[in-house]
Image 1 (tube, one colour):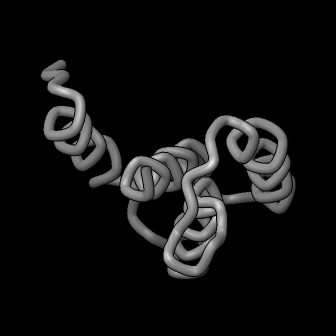
Image 2 (spheres, rainbow, N blue to C red):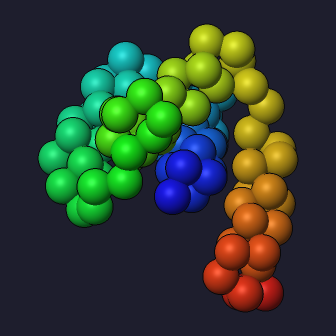
Length: 89
């Protein structure tokens, strides 16, 4: 689940950064979505005892702080999806 949530953080970043600006309201909304939608879905924990769904926020925040390029997000997600779930398109 951790890798899945990391990829979701990247995809959400890609969506927020498509206009080249990640606005404060987008960051706040993501945090609301993680809290209200992703945390209740399942109870996987990381090695520190935190819900793994927080990886979405952690990765998203890191990408915002480092002004990350969005060009590799979708291709990397497709690779992950194929490896993990067997989807090819």
